[in-house]
View 1: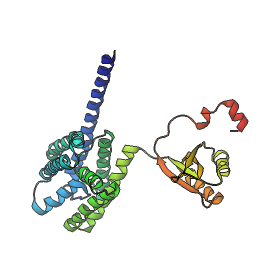
View 2 (view 1 turned 180 degrees about the vertical axis):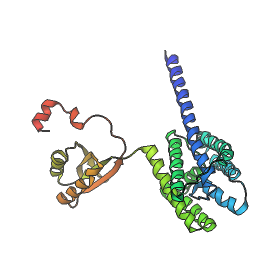
View 3 (view 1 turned 135 degrees about the vertical axis):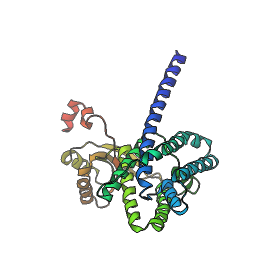
Amino acid sequence: MNKIGELLIDNITKRNRIARIIVLAFGCLIVALIYNAFMVPNKVVYGGLGGLAIVINNLTGINTVFLLNIFIIISIIVSLFVLGKKKTIYSLTGYILFAIMVDITQPIANSLTFNFNSYLFSISLAAFLTGLGGGIILRTGFNTGGSDIFLDIMQDVFKIPLSKASAIFNGVIIVLGAFSFGIIKTIYAIICLLIINFITDYVLLGSSTSKMCFINTHYQDKIEKFLKNDLNVGYTLIQSTNGIGFMKRTIIMCIIPTNLFYVLKKEIQRIDSHGILYSNDCYTVEGGKTNDFIPVWYRKIINY
């Protein structure tokens, strides 16, 4: 029976992996097509190794697809030596598929044009599609290598936070683009990058309509009363102790709609000027209302 179960799980895993690779290929196709059809002809240096390839192409005339393939090979070699075999092999599927799609789409891209009346609209559309493709790729759990490897190295080896590493890496390439193509192109490239990042995050995470809040206050009863009676939201009480080992406190945790967040923040400041509010975007809230889990008879007693 155990062997049959293992075979079934293995079969399901293989099917899931194949489905993910198909979706990954579709995402790579979108990104590669837009890169060859719009980014390269219009010299949009929005960061990454793709942007670096455009800069080097402008200086030397070497084909951007050839340069990208060289960069991918270098990335794989560097990753093997610095990040190790395990991380490299896991990412190899994305590297290879993206390299193939870039090669395939180059001749197709030559017959496509983005000749809209507004250049801003054209670049916005290209950025939207690139972000869509990037989000699809990341949702599969894979990546396309390239700059991701160098960001991992900056984080793992040099202990630079990922957000700062990304800003440094892409910032240097955008500056090189500014020297090569001028400030106007660079402004458009920055707009392009912002749209790509926004759409990628949206596809990957969805829209955040709620906030998860942790409230540390001396006026727990008043905050609880406000949450229950005024905002009509449920909450959880978490017993906590500070890192030194004393000062036991109760933290109030609640999830509220984003449009009520500043109402809560203002009320906490009014009730307890020394209170602490921690908050994060909450992208997934599933299940029924909190009070659905409270027995009816108990709700009547506590007037909930």
